Length: 344
Ligand code: NVA
Image 1 (cartoon, rainbow, N blue to C red):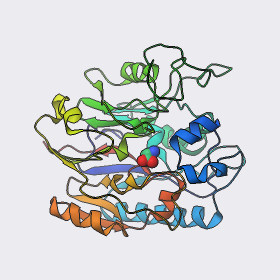
Image 2 (image 1 turned 120 degrees about the vertical axis):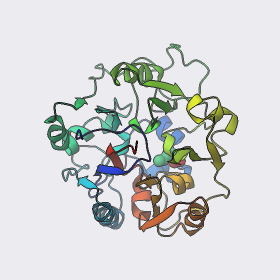
Image 3 (image 1 turned 180 degrees about the vertical axis):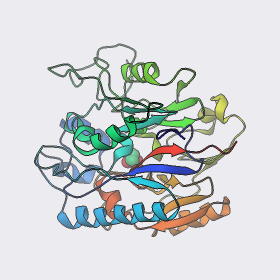
């Protein structure tokens, strides 16, 4: 098996990266970006060199150690990034690697981040892992293209395909976050968002292995950033979705989903209050890592969601993740699938 090989989000996970949360720093980007993507009550926190409260970063780091241990117990090979003091370099975090690395078949592709505060994240935290993976001649590691200097991504609309859309970034350079895409065999479903533009999608299409195609999902979320609180495939033929962000009709337009059982999350997620949800919506409840098409990592306090998973024939494995949530995501965001072994 190559050291990188994944064609979907649910086949048995064999190898994974789990992030690290220590020394996480509030991301600092222009106010219109933060206002459009972060919870409105915490906007003043997003300033330069402002660390997350230590109790949050430290507890989140311990939660991710626990997630790594759980996955190892499940027989998954786990890679961890280097410790980085993100405050010292004006960065954000090492806890959300799903945003920065996308596995497609045997290729692993680094995001061309729209956010300049994230530009060094993969180099500083994850380069040694990428170096290790690249030792396998079957694997292709694709690093991000350098952005123009000066960067023009926030300089107003360019009209190159994105007119009339509500995104803060323009289309003047390549920009995409890996977390705006998911694998469904040789089809990737993606979304445009405040961090993914048309040039980013065209670039990504040019880098993925031959035969793979990107299709863009029509989402109804003016704050879109990362598709993993919009849809989540649990196993072949079963997908859950956030009904306020995408419609069943929009999903059915895609041939890969046409015959699937598509289930809207049947409840409004409870507010994540302690610790406060500083960076994300309550839809993090559905941001789950599927271990093997049956087992799924669920926050230990998300009992309503866990009950629903059981009804759908899944088996929740509980892991505390509330402090990770506060920094930027749940078990899906905090990991990168490296190898998933299809059972055929
Ligand atoms: N920005 C999205 C995705 C987070 C993983 C949200 O807050 O729902």
